[in-house]
Image 1 (cartoon, one colour):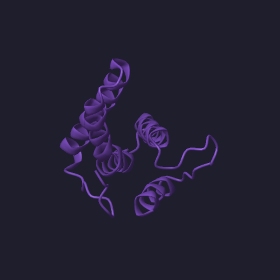
Image 2 (cartoon, one colour):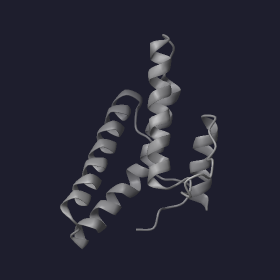
Image 3 (tube, helix red, strand yellow):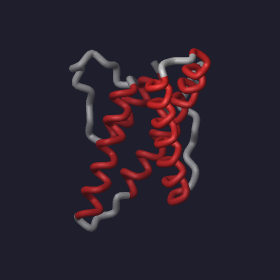
Image 4 (cartoon, rainbow, N blue to C red):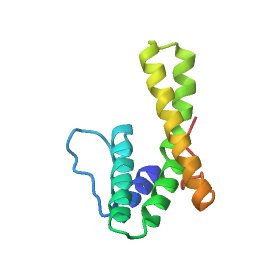
Length: 123
């Protein structure tokens, strides 16, 4: 529940709350990716208006580092050991690479993010 609470704190900080529609929990991969989309959109909106997008960039950096950027690589490793259909293995590998590249760019701009949520994610 600690991880879920932290995810919800990120959402609330940016004025969002889960709707409960679709049946996914707030820490489900689809919810987390949708949240990253909202942050990227907010950043682009601020830049278009000539405003500082740093808060959205830092939010994206911290969220990736503490949540999907931590557990997607673990999921990828477990999935590879199971020898799934090539489509699913490549989809997860692509997501892993995209998150790692986005995080690397954000950390190059704003410094390293803390990788630990309030409690460790079990492997």
